[in-house]
Length: 258
Length: 322
Image 1 (spheres, rainbow over the protein chains, first blue to last red):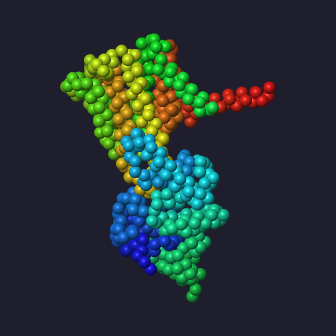
Image 2 (image 1 turned 135 degrees about the vertical axis):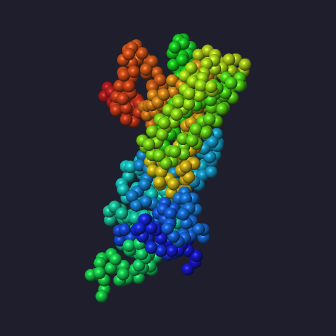
Image 3 (image 1 turned 90 degrees about the horizontal axis):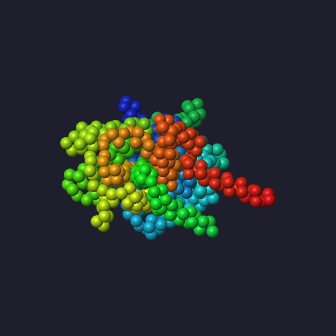
């Protein structure tokens, strides 16, 4: 396998006396879908927050695309090419879907505030670029027809997908999805799987945190399993499915094969 | 057809604004209109912070005071042109923008508002007590008026026209920013700043930019005030003034440029119309504003538009019926 796009080496997090994540190694291969799973409180979201710079790590290093990003500022990490969605969605409810997506492309544009006041031609060109890019993304994900709706009027499932689109708008090399299927009904979940697949086929790489085995097993190339802050298994979906320790962590000792 | 009609409305409104002092021919009302213009500029600035980013800035009076004193003191002490004073006021605006922008990064909601009230109070205390520099509660007198091509802008009507040009420039700038990617970014900050940061945007720098624009509009408005009245005193710049600017942003239509203009006009003109009520005029004014906010939560402009479409649809129904 070639060089990994995201590499966690011995990354750990302590909150006071609580060890939330024990030294953890993860390698995300380029153009893959890597899932991080584990029961509630396993430290999945903490891991994502360390990758994105929201939390400082208590030890270890995080390398992204060959650069050390450990404890960098969130917006700088994002600029290097990590996009993210949130467990409890963080959209802009009083703006239209198209505007939501277009904000994602802000960092791709160059014209500053003062120049923008007088550079009529340049701003129109930039605005058209953003709009076209956002529209083509929405078209790809099947939401072009509702682009002028206010975000708050869209169903929950579509809001979640629009967060993925907004992250895609930043031209990321890696997108972290924090429980994208949480709170979705089965048909929305199917649409979500479809959307992630489509994005993957268009060259995006995903790091997926998920509870829903349906989604994980369908999508992932590689899986890492956390339980109580410790990595208990890593491998292909097939291996994970038959791993005793994973079954014990999820279902209890009684269900593990003796 | 529709576009032509719209253009016609704009032209008619433009002509009315242009001829206003000639139509009214009343010094008192000309002063009111000049105040409307100044307030429009300050409110357009505040709109970036309170309207778009959604942080309740109650420090406008302090910004406004520093602009007025900065320009007035510079022209009075050095005898330089008021235009230089105006430039100095704009520079002060940038400094204030950075100074107020930083606390806004850490303070949310009520705590930020309290900080800005504190800022206004500190400014007022300094103006009152640095008697050597500011003249204390006596204020600054004999402030030079603007001059244009050797002509002193020393009458109300002349000021009206000069300030109208200022307002058009401010309107152009505000309109460009609000309707650009920057305006969109400011609004997204109001909605959810965590998400914005995750898109690679340096929130600190964006917020400070917005505060700078806001404060520059405010200090320029302050300088205009100083060179118009030609006398300023600390008693003018109370937190009540800041409240009124927030009302201007809220009443017309939050975040929109036309809304802010209408808000500034309503909040400035309405009390003058109610003066006939004697000592009841202020309470009547605030009751009307409060009722307005309750009745038109989306602003007076939105209410007006609804009324017009309602009348129109009513008319078409009538025509069909006949």
